[in-house]
Length: 448
Image (cartoon, rainbow, N blue to C red):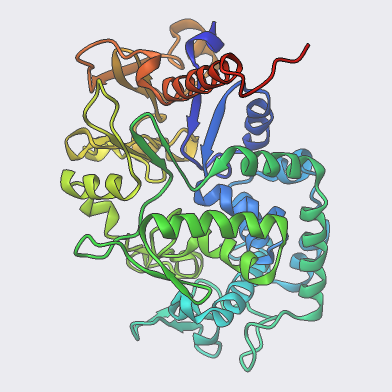
């Protein structure tokens, strides 16, 4: 019944991270009858890690260690943390708010990120080089704006002030070991292969434009350009480059392509990220005013229907015959219903359906995510209640209750002929007619 009811499934990214069940979800998706995936920044992070990019691997470890998701690393993918844990315990001081293990992975990450930033000045991320801005005598750091802040720890035994971004021999050994484990993890590689074969940076389907994060914009609404290995790209052309470079990282694994996988995860001008990520500040500075992460102008400008129209035109989105309004469908930014945010924006032209399925987001969002359903009668947006307890689920069905918002109602029932599938069938019919004509007029002789 489910297979009949759900003809095709679109996932707008971020299957990985925040929860420990991503591997189980991927196993389920491997057997699903029809789906596509628009890569999220967390998916791209894991894709980069599986391809062997060290900074992506360090970030994957940091994300999952901070959320106590050891099981996906060790149980699901067979990635051992034993040497990293032993190194952390032997090198870093215990008894502080930051554990030795997190201290160790933080420093590894910031060293590896620093190396990428130094290799790629076009990423424009020199303000993220902060290990060399630490004053080890006073336990403070100077940020890019010149402000000086106390650090929550001054325990940096492997950071050489004269050469802060070089790994020590022991750190290099640990990273080499982890890279080897990620690139040889068979279960993980089956999942990443599936992400590449069924995924992309964006998709145009049935009058809709689907992508995870954003199309980078300037403040005036024009498409922001990015220096991509010496060539400038913007708009759809830029997202096509990002799609190409991700596949190159997986197939070829050259240094530039692998570095780009890290940038797609975290870069301000990345279409999967679109924000200035303050990882260092969140890790080492207690004052939350330093944690503010500016967002790409896309996230405010797309409140305007005209900006959404401009973006859809860039991607040649053609609305369906029985529904004159196309949609941009995003994930990425959880909808904070507790603060009055709504998932339907720009007079229905922008749909943000990442409400945060994972438990970590429930206090911020007030719900447990959204599902967008498109049928012959129009669109429905279902907002789900958060799972509470097994008893509540059994006695009150609270885990499957949801609220439905109907919109974009069709003037008439949408038929298969109105969809992309209908266009393909019409093309096949035309091909068959031409083949039949060719037999009838003798252009092709019938085989006996």
